[in-house]
Image 1 (spheres, one colour):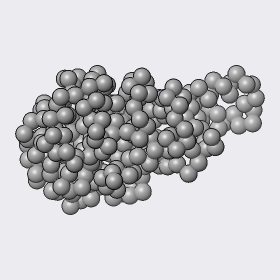
Image 2 (cartoon, one colour):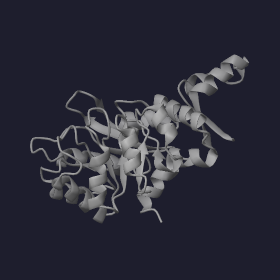
Image 3 (tube, helix red, strand yellow):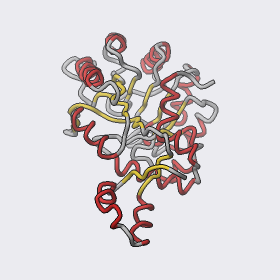
Image 4 (cartoon, rainbow, N blue to C red):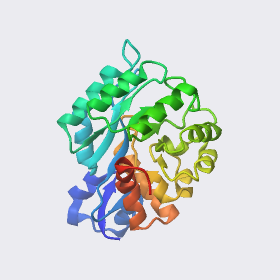
Length: 283
């Protein structure tokens, strides 16, 4: 497979250059890196911008620097958990779309809402400002994916042509039946389930098997979960600032080796699958 190496300690390898001679060193590097097929743009599906209520934070300039250091071409970004005094994420959404306007070739803006707090107005403003998708966090905002207010928001996003990225793991309840019910209500929804559905992966994979427009992102996912999915259903994600790009690339490299993904599959996982989803529904 021709391509370039990305992943943990890439700067060390670049600095060493021709001095890296020992086969053991090269093999150790290869075990930790992902080989990016030639012509592939790496696109991160999962980045938070702003200051989260738990103290994690990421500014646009720092994101761009991190992307440059790790060979990431573009990233989908949405607000951290900072709903603001009104609880509707309108200010945080505006900051993300402003950052995307400053970096139009690097940041793909998604908005974030609480389905129970002014979601229609927040989504309308974000759409007018250039948002291209929606992020929903059932744990942080305390709602069920199959609840009426969430179904309404997903329906509205789908009508706008937006994909919807859901937090799906790490503190979420059993999710297979919940997302099956949501998809019964909005069968044409295009969803990205974060973290590989970690914690209820098998049930989610089974519940969404007949929906090609439901993808799973790799952010802080479990390697065995990723290796069981068809690569056409997987998109690269880092969960910055909770995760980091080097480790996220390392995980994809491991999954590619365990599952035997070829260059075409890896091209899709690292960016092609996500960009196709942003362009429209699967044929």
